[in-house]
Length: 211
Image (cartoon, rainbow, N blue to C red; front, side, top):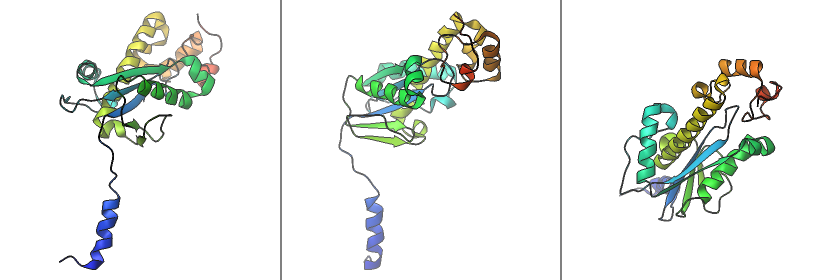
């Protein structure tokens, strides 16, 4: 027979488990907050429990080839997904954090099916019209967030490849816009291109824009 003394502990443990209504859950993540150029890209994904995808993980720990393969599989097997972005102009106008929230909101709003709950990687929630939860390291813990991280990362990497073809002097194909030594040296030598974020200090210090 369980003693009365143990009952409060049992109740305390039970109270830590949240109940959520049944329905579709969307995972959300972004790519491109840190780079010095280009849009910030966000994705929202609702996975199909009846059509699982093997190998989902935080996009940062996957090889480029594995991300590309999973990108195609996610788009084929997910119940629905949406990829959205906030532009360089929006980043420079409202700051990178608010632009990231804007891109995430757009991704959720653009879903063909409406989720009952949204799980977002990180510690902040964008404006949503459905219940949401921010999960630190969610891209490694929640499969739908992992899927969103892959869609966002591949989309932005492809954008960087296209930018490299237009402005090869910066090396966007390698550093993906991050402030590496090579990128900073190119900024000092050539100035910034139109896709650089002028509100970021290294770009502001680079001076004349390359056209």
